[in-house]
Image (cartoon, rainbow, N blue to C red; front, side):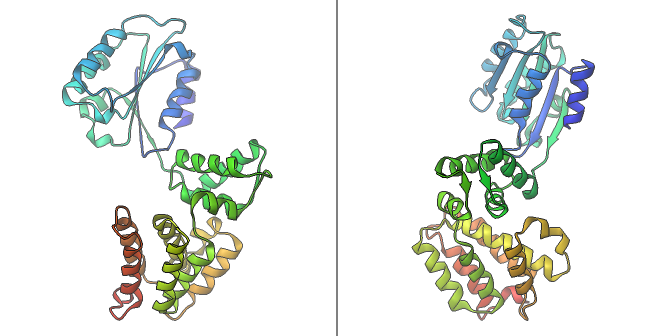
Length: 323
């Protein structure tokens, strides 16, 4: 995607409308700004508009009028419309008129997280670029690179944890890293510092949950949840880390070690390999129960209840996940 945009910059063959689509935090607006600067547009000729706050047809009509004025000091005027899927139907139709016959000096860059909500007539007038969700390994490399550039030393385990908590978003990952860097006093980031700043549980708590499932030990499972609650651990983060390790156990059990080994520290890989050999090793049903619990945690009246119910279903007499 970047290579295509670079080629357009070098050739000077610039389209008048682009659509950048992808999940939140994947760099759509950042790339739009970079592209605008790359084609020689100065800040005075770049206009960023939040379509979610300017949804009416009057807002777009005002924009359509402004595009006809020449740039202040650049070859192009670039309009970056974020969350463009939020435009009303009438506003989209008004925008379409300009997209069909744009002035030569105007470039539109539309950004959206929901391409399916944009009218086909608008899509057909744009060059569409889809931003993929970054893998955990990519985010880990970004964390290490940015930390190094800021003068900090960060170990692989800490970088992996920040990347995992970033949940496939460059923005969220860098936001978490920024908080950790601000907290650190000695320019050396430790896993304990990351856990303290983010509210992530100690790895021992996650391992105790995983081990309790492998051993069918409901008492250990529920007591570990109680301990996490006592430490004010965020249940959403707790479940995310449990899911991460559980998935690794399941994949190793079925011989897919290569899929996950690059995303695990040496200690974590040893633990996962050991648990995967348990007589009551994880099944796909285990992951389904935990995933459902994770989805139900947000907004739960008792935050730990979805995890407790999942553990009872997995380990308890029902044994739903062991079927």
